[in-house]
Image (cartoon, rainbow, N blue to C red):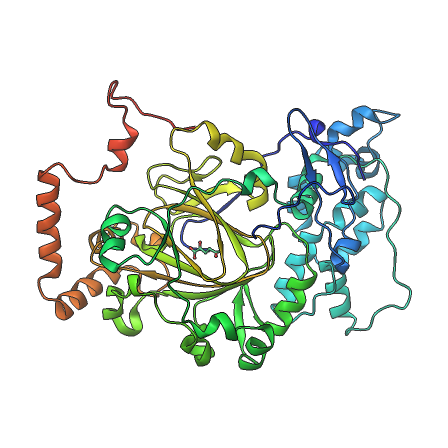
Length: 510
Ligand SMILES: O=C(O)CCC(=O)C(=O)O
């Protein structure tokens, strides 16, 4: 375990590409706690704290590597175990090597790890085993503390070797890539990432006030006291959810799992991007869960409902351990959303539509986004950049009983600070109907539209169904929009706000 690394850890920018479509405490702010693992950091920067956990995972996920900069401090600064042990593979950067190892079946990966200590380090990289488990077992696994142990237990029919194999003792393996991955899985959120809370918090708003102050101007708000009557707030204990959902599977990342298996995983995992339970059909599978909440009064106009069975997915139950969450994205189909917490706490960071968050790069056609590999990595590498931005993000910590309104087009990132359970719904009201229709008729709608099978025809189907259910509504809204535009009250478009008024040149916020 390195005792000093931060000043020697180059900020790596590991990226991943995903579809832009929904891929979809009081914070237990740790006062500096001497008994914690405490890794000294660099200039002006207090320190990183490692999570303390008694889980099997944290015991067996000990860090085998050190950041490359630490090599300079070692007694023999040229001896990186990585180089000697990789042989001719040493010229390959770690990310590429891991990509290649990701193509191997488990047996080859295991064989490779016996070839040298250095290969043991890379072949033990747990995300490689996670991919194997999910590919081969889907959601039918019993998490055993690490993904490698999970795989081994599954293929050996659940029999555990009585001699628990210990890996070799590893000293002197330096790799920024592997270290950063480990660090992002094991460090706590820093106090300064949690401290800023600048969202408007409102209690007792009337619907008219909500529309005038937040929905119409497309601004976020945290609503207090509007879900107090939800049975879910009292009823949704683990026991209740496990009983009600017995035998039913929920969507968890790329697989489906029963809730008891998911909790066994989420209780014992410490990884960079924990699997997140995000299920759009929960109320159909477990009708009692659907009856345990109701749509808050502000969001009752739900124009997509005119599509009946053909409406895009619109509601989800979300469950995840501390550290799980949603990396930066914009909500699907240009809808707005609300997100209500039943248990736990979530940190939110939101940017308005015209400000792409630092470190996030949407493709020109808007179908894909490249962003840091994990939420923790975004905080480590990009959060501080926001401080100097002209348009700083809206931030908050939302706790049980509270609801965040996410206006359409806003970029948002969410990380669970403790185990959390939430309900979210996306909706279209008349304030947003024209935006949604514009979105659905984009030329690459087949790439952009999500949550439904017939992406290309959704626009026409929606237009017809709206006209049938609300004759004249679209025309009326278009007329009002024209009048507003003519009166100069039109909301600034992306290009209006991106163009510098004085020079006509582009304005960059980062
Ligand atoms: O992880 C969460 O609770 C946020 C979910 C979210 O951002 C979304 O549903 O768009």
